[in-house]
Length: 370
Ligand code: HSE
Image (cartoon, rainbow, N blue to C red; front, side, top):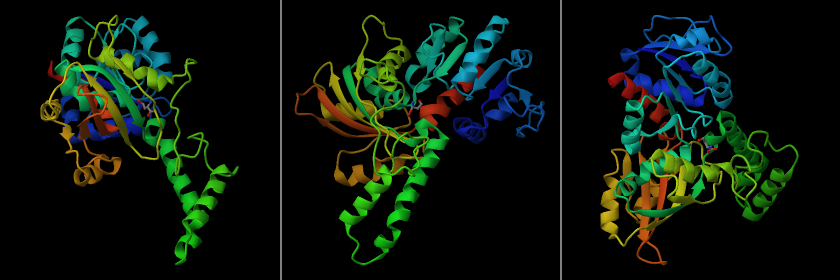
């Protein structure tokens, strides 16, 4: 199987390559590396037959692939995908970008949650398989058991999204902001009688100053947060918030005329690469908490239910604890004061693994094993 790989140098692409190497995927395919800027240079050595980089805008070269897997971004997808399809190419297109996600011809891929939807799409001859929005995918991974059992009436998801979701440069800027802030008060912190009030006043003044680095994030993220992610849809909702319901329902193949309501506020926080979400879940009936925990734990092999205690929540249910691991943690589970059908939950997952690269890698594996 000839697999064209585009956008492998970026953050999601490099995590994808790393995971493919860890799982031995390259031994099962003939990879062809494409580049939008460095065609002709040497490709990463993965035991393939084509050792140089091919031009990622060369439709003839792309059309020789059985599969194209791209992390290059939405602009590339918009430019290349329609032209490649118009040329008659009927290979499989696996994409991390959102551009094609909601099109009828596309299937949103998250196989531990919707393998049935993926299998139906493959049997029906569909060829475009698109990774979901990271927040949606991570919520679905955590809540897979309750979705499978049909127990969810609605979900309100309040998010705490990491800088990685805004891209590699935003992650770097977050650290630059941290360093900038620390630099301003380093001398005060070193003195035995440092005053928190004075340190805070200096930091707040620095955040308001013209020299504070906000080119990528748009506002201070270190020591603050940003309560808006992605475009303004004009009805008070951000595009990120709109995606929750739209993608969740499409992912599980739900009748669009009777959507499951998923809504909330999406917030950027100063975590590096783990998205967290506080969920209010309205169940269709009163289910005992122990049963909810065991249904959630049975959702897939990656979901980890964290006991709802201080001793377990603090060390195990945070971006710092989950970052870089394939686990999706869910905890703070309890019945809420609104009534026995209302359950609270807090979930954390790595935005670059299950939120981006892993569903793409596993889709390729599904095609290989077909
Ligand atoms: N839109 C997401 C975010 C990441 O900004 O965190 C991509 O799914």
